[in-house]
Image (cartoon, rainbow, N blue to C red; front, top):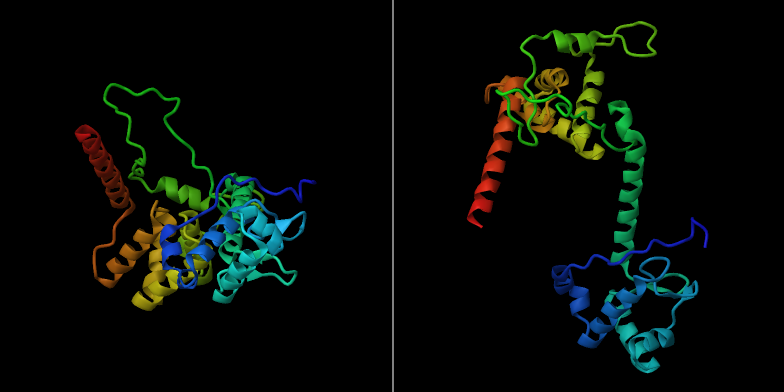
Length: 290
């Protein structure tokens, strides 16, 4: 086999007992038909295409299937007909029996694997490559700097609060990016509405929200709070670049609309650090009592 045709070796397949028990079509079949079907799924797990009953690249007939599970041709034909009539088993145009669920699960696995490969190729290049898959690798500080007597190792998940001065953010926003011919980058305050939408969606995507949901999330904020409120919230988020942009945008919109005070970046980081500390404390209590 070539690299393109060699099938992926999978030691197991997804099986959900609750789905099996609640499947009306399957439960309408006899116990013998259900037993044949779970055996057929195990056989299809080893076949190519995945989830299809195949032998040497051809559809497996009932006689061959019967020999695999210890049934006569007549018994196997009757049970296969029962499964087909109930809509449990499906047939391709070539006559191969297959499991629709197994085929769908395999398609999903392959799509995720392709996305992970793309992420590995582009994730380290930075946020501008976010649409191609993956998230930028965040630098880990403190690995080479020894701690002083007054310092302690922070818990995983903590972030250092931003400096009180706004010089660092203003410098990064107005610095000259590579390859721009010396023109300064546009600051959030000068961004037109369309660019702000793109920047806001990019923040959400970098935080792990699926691209298809980013637009819907921003659209719902506009519906709930109005265009002007959301524009200012996104503008603030682009400057603050919070670790949790979903919560930040909601809180910012609520604050502008008068529902609650808008958090600043310092407060957002302190809240996040407190949540991490509480989670670790709860975990420590569990271990102490075990």
